[in-house]
Length: 115
Image (cartoon, rainbow, N blue to C red; front, side, top):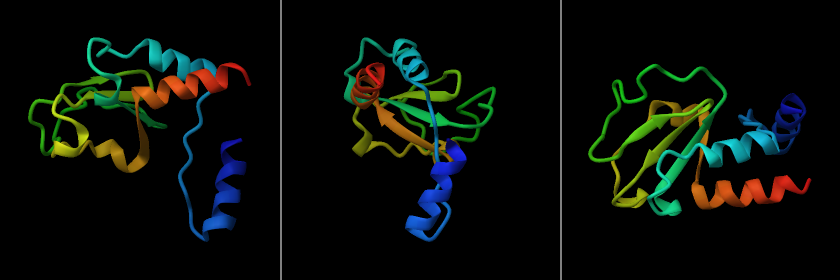
């Protein structure tokens, strides 16, 4: 599936476009494993990646102020207490992944549960 999507996106965009694929179960599992459930969902982000996560997700991370980051299975969770618009945090995996806040992850879990 991933390869077919990448091929079609290449035809459409004229360049390579990375694709992250998750099953409905994996999306629901990500939502359930959110380590920041006491925080507003729009302030918590899941960064989905298709690579091995680093042992220390904060190693050599520029701009870290007061944003806690936790490793998941194939995603990082980050809490932005002051909001994403006010952060200088740059996670190295951002370039090879896609980030969604927990409101969006919840909606994706809801939509894919009925597919």
